[in-house]
Length: 97
Image (cartoon, rainbow, N blue to C red; front, side):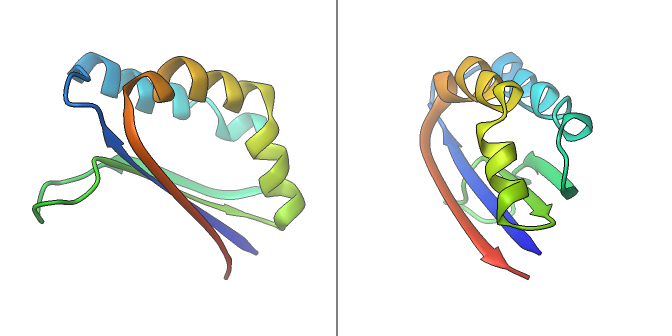
């Protein structure tokens, strides 16, 4: 199984409405993805200063399922429309679990 973690820091000018839209749009993706085992995301709880603002943790059956998610037109659309416009920094990692 493969785990994908994406961590985002939003632009200072990103509005609460934009942040909520990003989460709402991400919530539409799981039913569209074959090989997706688990999909969790959320806003940072602000317990530790300096944390990123938002994270996604997704588990896939294998690397092929991850690549299908990464390249899926719905995912690409959500990223371009709702996430990239408010992103200051993005970091990702994929690892076997």
